[in-house]
Image (cartoon, rainbow, N blue to C red; front, side, top):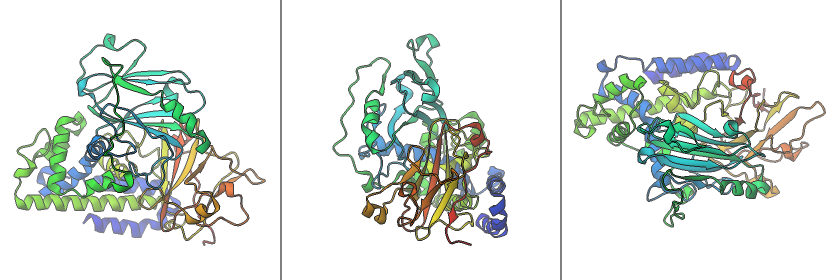
Length: 488
C-alpha cells in the first residue's frame, strides 16, 4: 500500500517539486513518517518489523561498522583496536570503501570507543592554518559532540570522554580536560583534518601524528601495528550491504542485543515497548529465535517493505534538488525522527550536526532528470554568492552507489580529480562568476581548473560546507541548480 501511495505522489507532484523543492521534500518526509504512526499493538509481526527495521537500522549499521574496523577481518584503511586512534594518511581513491561518500578534502582519523571501561583522554595539538573536526557519534548515529578548531580555536584541545554509566565527579576529571559524556558506551569518533591538495598531505600527516587517545590511568599504552590479516576495503562488502543482507531473524536478534547494551533514550519508550512484543530489546517477552516459522517469514517481509520505502524515499529526495534542507532536516540530531535517521544511514552514515558542517546531495539536474556522465552540466556561483562558510567548501562527484569512480579521459590528460572547492584555484569570468563544469571529457573553451570530471553512468554530487554561516543553516543561501548543457 505504501509503495502505491508513493508512486501516486511522484506522479502528481513532479511538476510541483521543480518550483517548490523544499516544501515538496518536507511534505514527502512528513507523509512517510505519518504512514508509520499506527497503533503498533494492532499491527502484525510484519508491520512491527517494518517499523523496527527503520528504527534499528542505524545502530545495527554502527555495530557492523565497528566490526569492520575492529574485528578479526578489519579494514586495512581504518582498522585498529577498540579505544585506539587510526589515521588515514592519504586521500581516499576508488579503492576506499570503509565509508560511503568518502571525503577527499580532509584526511580521516577514526576510533571506535567502548566506554564501559572508564574515561578515555583525547589530546589534540594546536592548529592554526586549517580546519579540524572530531565528531562523536553515539550508537544510534547521533552526533552528540564535536571538537576541533571550532571549539578550541588555534589552541590545544584536551577532552575526557566518559560513557553513560560513569559515576565520577567533576573533580575526577584531569586538570585541563573538558568533560564529554556520551549517551552510549559504543561511540564512533570520526576526525577530519583539512587537506589542501596532494602537496599538503605531509603537513596533515604531521598533525595527525600528534593526536593522542589513551585511558585515564595508562597514558603510555602501546598501540598495535596494523593487523597483517586486514582486508583491503575494495575486497570487503561495505557495512550497509552487509546489514541489508541479514535475514529478519539475524537483524532483529542483533538489534535486541545492541538495545540492551546501548539502552535507547527515554523518548523511544513506545518503540522499545512495541519491539518487545517480537522478542527484541530490554522489554522483550522472549527471544527472536523463539518466534514461529511464520513470524520469522513476516520479519523478512517487514524488512523488505521497509527497505523499499527507504529506497523510494532516497530517490524522492532527488526530486527536491539539493538536499536535505538544513532548516528542515536536523542531520546528526534526530530525536524520534527515525525515518530520516534511517535514510541518512543509507546515503551518508556518520553525518555531522549542521553547526559543524552541512552536507547536501544532488542526483538530478534542474529538470529533475538523473545526472549522467553521458551529459555535460554546469553549476555557477554568481559573484559575491560563493558558499558563506567560515572554513571551506567543496563539491565531490560519486558514482550512483556513493563511492568514488575514476574518469578515463581525466586520467589520460593527467587531471584525475574527484572534487573542487575553495581550496582550489578556480577561475572566475569577467563578471566574477565561478562556474564548475561537469563533463566526461574536458570541456572545450573553458579553464581546466574548473573541470570536475564525473564517472560514466548515473552519478551524484555532494557539497560540503564546513563551519557554515547562519544563512546556510536557515536555508537562506541555497546551492545553485545543476544545468544540463544543451538541455531544454
